[in-house]
Image (cartoon, rainbow, N blue to C red; front, side):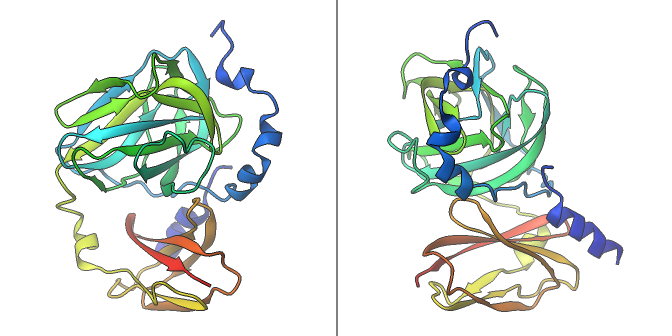
Length: 302
C-alpha cells in the first residue's frame, strides 16, 4: 500500500533589467498563440528524479542574461557520439515546469510550428534567478550522432515564467564548444512555439555523456515495454512484459507532449486501448517504476 501511494503521488503531483525584455515587447501574445497554447496545456512534469550516469560532461552555453521570455530554440552539433542527459536553465524564482523538445535538423524555419518537434520530457524546477543554472531533473538518454544538426526547444510552459537568455550576434553563429559538442546561437520567445526573437543565446548548461547509451540502470536492461500493433488504427495494447509486481505509473503523450492518459497499473498487458477518437500521429508511452523509466513510441493511423 505504501508503494502504491508513493507511485500515485509520483504520477499525479504537478505544477500547481532596465531595457525591455522580449516578453515586455511582445504584444497580443495570448491571442496570437491561443490555439497552440490550448493544444499544449497538457504538458506536465514527469515528476520522477532520474540519476545521471557517471562520467558526464557539462557545456556552459552563456550566463550573461540581459533578456528573457519563456524559452529558447537553438541548434547543437555533436563532434563525437554523445548521449544527451538534460539541461540546466536560468529562471526567475518560483516553481515552473520546463519542457524539452528536439528535432532532427535545424530549428530554423520551425520557430512557430510544432510540426516535426518531438517532446522528450518535462519537470518542475525551482528557479534561482539569472546567472544561476538549475538542472532540469530528467534523464533524457538521447543518443546523438556526430556531425548531425539537432534543434532543441527548452521552455517554461507557464506564460508568466521568466527564462533568461542573452542577445546574440547572428543566428546560427557558433557560440561555444568543447571537444564533443558545438552550441549555436538561436531564438527566444513565447511558449508555445512562438520563438521569433533573434538572435538569442540560451543561458544554462548542456549535460551529456560521451558515447552512446551504455550501462543503463539494471531495471531498464532486464525489463521490456512493447506496444502493438504498431502502427495501430482501432486499438492498441501495451505489454509491460516482466515488470515486477509493483505499481507502475503509465503515461501516454501525443507528439506535442500533451498528457493523453495517466494511470497506475501493475505489469502485464494493458488494453485494449480504443483509438477511434485519437488523431493520427506519433504517441509516446512512459512507464515509471520505482523511480526509473521505460519508453516506447507507436503510431496511430485511423
